[in-house]
Every structure is written in C-alpha cells, then in structure tokens.
Image (cartoon, rainbow, N blue to C red):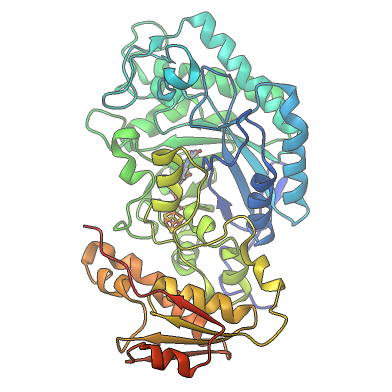
Amino acid sequence: MKNNFPNIFQPFTLRTATVRNRIVMMPMGSDLAGHNGELSDEHIKYYELRAKGGTGLILVENICVKYPEGSNGTTQLRIDKDCYIPRLFNLTEACHRHGACIGIQLNHAGASAMSSRIGMQPVSASNIPSKTGGEEPRPLTKEELISIANDYGTAAKRAVNAGFDLVEIHAGHSYLISQFLSPLMNDRTDEFGGSAENRARFCRMVIDEVRKAVGPKIPISLRLSVDELVAGGNTMEDCLEYLQYLNDEVDLFDTSAALNQSIQYQIDANYLKDGWRSYMAKAVREKFQKPTIAMGNIRDPKVADEIIARGDADFIGMGRGLIADPNWCNKAQYGDVADIRKCISCNVGCVGNRIGGNKPIRCSINPDLIYGEEYKRTKVQKECNVVVVGAGTAGLEAACTAAEVGCNVVLLEKEQQVGGLSVQISKIPAKTRLADFPTYLKHRAEKLGNLKIVTGVDATVETVKAYQPDLVVNATGSVPML
Ligand SMILES: Cc1cc2nc3c(=O)[nH]c(=O)nc-3n(C[C@H](O)[C@H](O)[C@H](O)COP(=O)(O)O)c2cc1C
Ligand code: SF4
C-alpha cells in the first residue's frame, strides 16, 4: 500500500504505548459533555470518528480534576469521581477499536475559573487574575497544594482504569499549574514562588503524584506554554531552565505556547504559517533528548512531514485540522491530498461557539463534525433534479452534498469562476488561508459526474425552470463582514 508521507506515517513507542503514526489530535474543549461533566453519546462519536480517520494518538480535551473550583468552560468533562469511569471507558474502547491510542488532559483551571460558574472565589498561586479584567483569585496554601496534587494523582488512576494509554498534565495556557510557573501570575515569597525551581515546585508535586498513580508503564505528557509570548512572562529560555526540575518523569513534551493575553499564538490566527512555532518543540527536544509534539496551524501534510524529517519534533499536533477533517490522516497517507478539507483557522465555529457562545463546538467548513460523511449512505430513492443558484462556498457544499446522495445537480454561477466571496477575501495578504476552502470544494465538485457547473449565467426563472428542478437551492451570496 502506498504511503505518501513516510516520516509522519511510522509508529512511535512511548513506554508501553505504540502509536501507529505521528499525528496527535490536540486536546480541545468542546462543550459536547453533559451538564454533569459526563461524556455525551455525540462526544464519543466525535472522538471515534477521528480515531477511524487514522489519527495516531487522540488527546481528549481538558478534564476537571477538582470540582467545582478547578472547572473551566460551560460543560467541562469531569474525572473527580469514580462515577465518570464507565463512560470514559466506553470512549477509550471506541477509539481503540479503530487502532488509535488515546490520552486525556488533566487540568485544574485555577484563576481561569469563574465564580459565577463555580460558586466561589477562584484559586491561584497569587491574587493576580489570569486575564485582563479577570477576577481576583485567592492564593492557595501549601496544604491545599498538596491536596490538589493528590487530586491529579487520583484522577490519573481513574484515567488508567478507564483505559487511557497516556495521561497529559496541562501546565500551560494560564491554568493553575501555569499560574505557578509564570512570573506574571506568581508573586509568592514562599517555596512556591521566586526562582524557577520554586515556581516549578507545584508542577513537580503533580507529576510525582501522577507517576505514583499510573506506575511505570503509562507515559506522561506535559503540556507547556514554552514561550508565553507576553512581556514579562516566561520566554523559551526560561522554560528550558524550569524544565530541568520537571523533566525526569515526563515521557513527552507537548510544546504549546502563549497565555490568555497572547491567545492568537495559542489558537493560532489564520495569518500564521503552518508549523511556525515548531522551533519551540525543537529546542525542548534538543535540550532534554525527549520526544516532543509540534503544533500550530499545521494543515499541510508536506509541512508536517518536513517537521518530523528535520527532527524538530517526534509528533505533529493537530487540533482544528481534525475538527475540519476527521479523515486527515487516511487521506494524507493513502489518498489524494487535495481531498483534505483544510481548516482555515477562522475560529468561528469552534472557538467562537465554545468560548464566545457557551455552546458545543461546530465548524464553519465541516457541516457535520459528529457523524461526518454518514449522510452518503442514504441515497435518493427516485430521480431528483436539483438546481443550486450561486457557486460560493455554501452553494458548492449544497451541490456536492446533493450529488453525493444521488441527485442530478446543476450549479449556476453568475461569475466566470466559482468560490464566491471567499475567493475575493483570500486575496487579502492576511487571509490567504481562506482560499483552501473553495479550492477543496471545487476539487470535490469536479469529481462528481452527476454535478454540472454552469458559470457566467444569470439564474432567471426561465433558466432555472429549463432544468426541470424538483428542488431549488438559493445560495446567492453572502455579505462581507468588516
Ligand atoms: C475549540 C478549542 C478548544 C481548545 N481547548 C484546549 C484544551 O482543552 N486544552 C489545551 O491544552 N488546548 C486547547 N486548545 C488549543 C489546541 O489544543 C491547539 O494547541 C491549538 O488549537 C493549535 O493547534 P491547531 O492550529 O492545530 O488547532 C483548544 C483549541 C480550540 C480551537
Ligand atoms: S471553525 Fe474555523 S477554525 Fe474552527 S475548525 Fe472549523 S475551519 Fe478551523
């Protein structure tokens, strides 16, 4: 069988877990959980679809180790009680069935929790908010820190019991551990503040508790904001310094970046190039001789393959790329790269829904991120003529979908080219990534024998009627948002 990208599609072993390839689905809070913090059926299906699509290692979104004070988001997953184990087990079983490994990201939100949600004052290293205008947290005592480290350990044990192959400790992105590591949020004068060693002490306690709980067979990943990319925060050099106190029990460094104040570098803005921050993974890998994950707008398999070939990292982290196309791996490995629906980093359907709107994630370019292409299994039972008016992205998507379920489709476009507004907007230098979507749709449409595209035509009533449509779809265009 052919393998288009041999560097990414080769296995890698972390302790007892052999990951079939180098693609890791990044942890991404989804708001797909039930209000009690339990995985919903849709949630399990969502991850299972990415496992089926060939992903090597799935890292499940941040899960709460101490409820309510450590919780984050609207309906965050929980692992603070045994009652969460059965459904987590259903999830690991569903992903293992398709050959994927699966890990989970343990987290305490600290000052990034909101009192309106948790019903108490948030806690942290100091009384410094984790975001501009955020609430003032209460500094934790040493006894409380010992107890929270213990909660991480108990949570990790539950994770192993539920069948996870790896546990990840979230030590980045302005959450509790990061609030200790970053001098921006830690002004303590005791053994948990000041020097790099002191600021790393709480993280060290957590790692030790987790290792005690999971034993020698389960790999531990540590997610970091390698460079916080905020004035006065940890730089990459600072991170390389504090990691010497954390390194020995860690098997994998998940080398993320940035804090709340620099979120455009953490959930990368669309103008940032594929893999722009893999130098961070490289620096950690070189200094500690441990495997690392590089991430950040990585959508193009060629770029991913080159990152591995260059030795910047051992794994490629892909977050939104797998929301947009759950089959990224299978398409990249065996198929046609042009079939990949590349995420355009718009942050509307995913981040916008979850963080901005307290709603489950969706995707602006993937109409069904839970069930994927299952719609193709149900074909029309009798002849059905469809005329779609307007070959922008919505019209192209509608036309392709109708053709894929067996309709005879005509797509009418006034302009000489298809793609509509997205093609125009992608000419703006900071928005070039947007062109990936119409390019993908055009390629998909061109492969469908029962879809005819007619450009340079005005869709009058007469023109439409001439095709004897059973169904007309009006997709005559959108208005630009400035
Ligand atoms: C909707 C959404 C939720 C996220 N939630 C988490 C999270 O739970 N934990 C975490 O460490 N990072 C989280 N991230 C960051 C991603 O893991 C990832 O590092 C980031 O999106 C950059 O990778 P990408 O360009 O491949 O998406 C989230 C990102 C998105 C888009
Ligand atoms: S909503 Fe936008 S940023 Fe999010 S996964 Fe879809 S295309 Fe990517």
